[in-house]
Amino acid sequence: MKIGILGTGVVGRTLGTKLVSLGHAVTMGSRSESNKAAAAWAKAAGKGAATGTFAAAAKAGEVVLNCTSGQHALEAVALAGSDNLNGKILVDVSNPLDFSHGMPPTLTVCNTDSLAEQIQRAFPGIRVVKALNTVNSAVMVDPSLVPGEHELFLCGNERAAKAKVAELLGELGWTRDRLVDLGDITAARATEMLLPFWARAMTKFGHANFNFHLAVGGPA
Image (cartoon, helix red, strand yellow):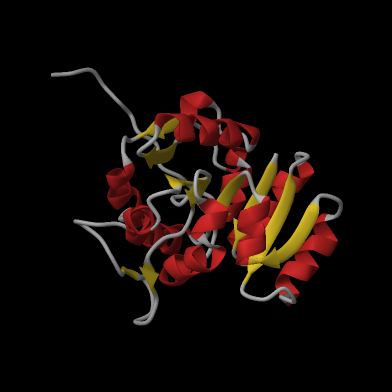
């Protein structure tokens, strides 16, 4: 599959490297064609890795992953271009985190809205699926780093888009029994609001190789 990645940070590079190793053709996009981090990633990732602008990555990808920081996500998607994204699946991995007051971060949007919803409203032709935003990049591509049972959440307005994303997540090691579909895109409010708790837990454990598990009983 041809996959576009928006963003050259740790999340984008980690996902891109894994996807290239699985045989996908990955184009990593940034503001500039000459982005040094993207160029270094492509050289290390090898055959199947390419770089370009946000627009080039969006145009190249059959599926596009938004791995930009939450504060710049809407701008990045706008630069990628609706003409390059309309009809395609955009997996929103970003979180609306504000670190301006230090740790733990706060959220720039919450409760009655979410970053994923803002992207979906601004670009109605894109099939937005929220996923992978509740675990760190290493766990994204290797769920076995966390022992025992633990789950990954996803949501979006279109069932077919979520099914396609579930297939891709399966290649990363997230089997169907570990995927929890929370419903339409408004469920991103809940998964994004997990991040302040996630940040507190990371401080407590001293590392980020952990995840959430839902222990579900029967009705009362």
